[in-house]
Length: 179
Ligand SMILES: CC(C)(COP(=O)(O)OP(=O)(O)OC[C@H]1O[C@@H](n2cnc3c(N)ncnc32)[C@H](O)[C@@H]1OP(=O)(O)O)[C@@H](O)C(=O)NCCC(=O)NCCS
Image (cartoon, rainbow, N blue to C red; front, top):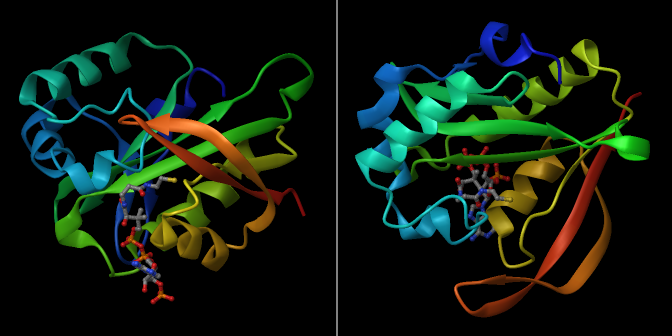
């Protein structure tokens, strides 16, 4: 993604601000992240329960990374969620995967739709990507809706491709392309 993207990108939007994480986000991060309804739709590296110690370790790890592109979604003056892009390597270096989450108290206000649209457009402007994709679990209609509203299209269903908390789940492959 390039060393500077994670530290310099700041998008002031109408419903939220997408900005770099700061070490002062520990408390807000732990409070919004510590929710089974959030973690159940994310990869296992997003733990439950999500303690202030998890938050501190994540933010400490982040400042040591050169090319990790993850940002906070700031709502009403505090970090209430996250959005990130991971560029693939080798022949897939023209592709990146995007992921996001938001604290439950902020759901349903169009916040992630706005953030996803803006980060997608900015990523195509900044980086030499052709494609950005997401892999929501098939039983995550809110995420599917957000992707569709942001212009992502369904490419396929990856049957029985994932296991979360002992349960096998399908994933959907959604993508958007450099226009
Ligand atoms: C998915 C998530 C990011 C959505 O964030 P958000 O800011 O609430 O999303 P928005 O308000 O922009 O849009 C949500 C849309 O989903 C719809 N929706 C929500 N729950 C739904 C459900 N159970 N069934 C169908 N649609 C649903 C909303 O109505 C809205 O669509 P609309 O504008 O057409 O009415 C948030 O719920 C979340 O963090 N979930 C847990 C983590 C997660 O799933 N991350 C994505 C992993 S792929």
